Length: 620
Image (cartoon, rainbow, N blue to C red):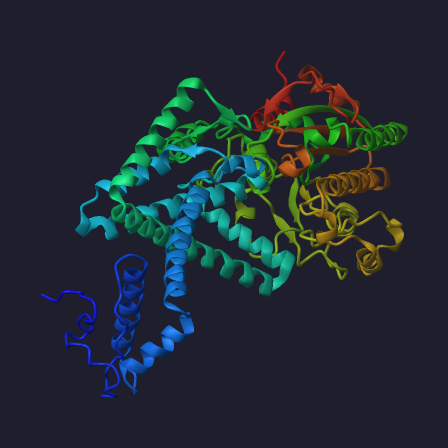
């Protein structure tokens, strides 16, 4: 056995005795002066580490030369020891910081504040305790596995932050994976193919880096705890006692308990959500099995609207906040008041109420499907099940009668959309078939005024046509509201080139999203534009046989709503024929274009049946 006595060198890394100083033999290492225990002993250990590294390197020129070079690079022995100690302490501290940040990261953007990281996580204490009891052989693998788990939970919280920012709800581990593809499509349409690829690369890098980082941090923590086991056990016991004390005393910080169980609560809630999501398919099949109008004879459908042109128009992100939020209500209210008076002067009357949307912030197609099908379509799985069924939709009911030509005007659709046949549309005008040659406005490819003008030219204004039913989607009020178009003379719309100058003068997305107030202002401006376009179309082209049903699809993103939990959207029926509104006089809706605050609020899936009953055969 080798003894480290003064004046003797330890065995070299390859098992041979160190050569005496000054021999110059190949592979030799110069001897160090005699060292004493204590700080000099630590210096000797540093020297041995350097020599061991040099021996393993096996580079030409000998281990002694490499050792001398590395030692010279590191500086004097005392400095080398301090550097090694600093690196060890720093890496341990960094590992603890990484794990605390991962464990305390909130899953909602409005909670992402410095105070969120000033808590004591039970998961961190439990993690340290598990690392202490792991057997030596399994410690490294077990620590890595636990670290990967922490990283995966952190990624789930990142997904939640994104979903709460737009849809005001957490990510569904079962049903929401398809929405990531929709997010990629949105990026491609707003930022181009390059922006989409950069974003995808960033997401993939994050998905790999976070688990790797947390795994490395956990392995490092496990090593430190094992090396200082007795002290670590005392620290874990103290932290556990402190956590229990905080729970008993009910101590809080920033409105949340100091003793945190964020990740444990998150995983518990997510386990319940997964069970519910797996059961949702069976529940939806039972709900969809009942269709009150599946077997209604065509001649008994929509008898109260025969000969009318019925236009179902969705105004993107037109929610309750636009009408009632103090920052937006005065301007939107003035638009609705002035528009109502102008329509009344043209002989039109209106009634308005509220519908509760299945979504908020996004997912417009889910709201459209809910409104038209009479089923609650709150996720992509339900949407796919619906569109592969033979369910009677509101638009499909018009087609079944054979009394209407049915068309869809969907400027936001830029790819094949086979679902159009399911919704009973004879013809579809997507973003590529509206004859628009002007610029896009953010996500919106075609300004609402131009969309409506093209509908007038291609369908509504055609001479000698029969009754028409149209589903029209207005997209100018779609997120991110940068830039926003403005009204132009209807006679000067041409091919849309007139919007080039308006687009150049508009605000960029970076400018709009520099602060929440700017976002809310541009959102309000976009709603004003959409309403003015729609009312302007009705005043210009509407007649005695025109029936307009317009509504919002969902509330805007939380930045605009201030995280309001309300999912209500306004819905309005406008007609010149008084008999049309007489059919819905029992609905309790408000006269005019603006629903009263206490007007009835129906679930959006209830509209189909109420509408078909109101305009079906009348009994008694």
